[in-house]
Length: 309
Ligand code: BDR
Ligand code: CA
Image 1 (spheres, rainbow, N blue to C red):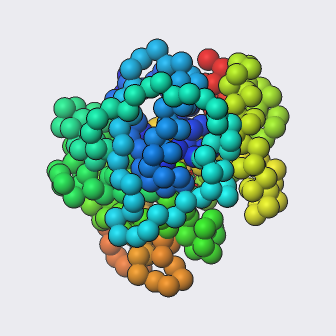
Image 2: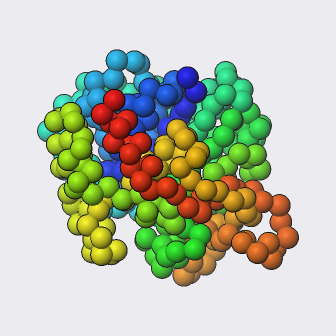
């Protein structure tokens, strides 16, 4: 099994990404690291533990806390989308017995990559703060990690928090910029251009066989789906973060092109914008594999079938 670290700010779709990764049994999950993002670090961590309890995971998966704020900015929560609790109110009364593992996420990432050079895949589904800190502390990480796949950015479409910025980039643009510029040989961007095509609707949810899991998915995505409808006119739940896990499971579900990508971090209107140099105007070497299309049906099937496995 491939070694994986998931880095999450557990809101509604991060949780579904965790479920996909665990249920696939395709990964040796070394740990799940948490960060401030959709909700506070504490809440993201509690939610991560709740999801592992919901799944009754039979393997030990450590959960390690990371950054409790962006590198240079104030936190910016998304309670309106994910609910105050981050899981759309679905597991409010669940008691958490799973204990958080001591340590700091950036250090954990470094230790694991050092222990397994060129074997660790990192899937990032929140702001990139933990990875930026890890690289700052141990620059060689970029050549020792197997690959990094992150959900973030939008290269052609519109933003989902400002007209130009996607949420994960917007929250910590300094971290995102540092990650883009770090020289990671295998860095894949899974942005809104493709995740807005990965739409889970009520008919998909009905196909989930395990009643407990089906009810959880229904409950956690109800408000999130309404919010998506208000902005996009489609009654569905965008599987942003699960698609990043899906890409780790099977690259064939997306089409990627290599481009030079940078992130704006110094603009009144455009902070967090991912600027993708499609025409190589800047004449810089490509630094990111950008997902430009997705086989949505293949991905949704992979998602449902994995939950039913
Ligand atoms: C991203 O922002 C968060 O709200 C989601 O969890 C996802 O990671 C989508 O823009
Ligand atoms: Ca997320």
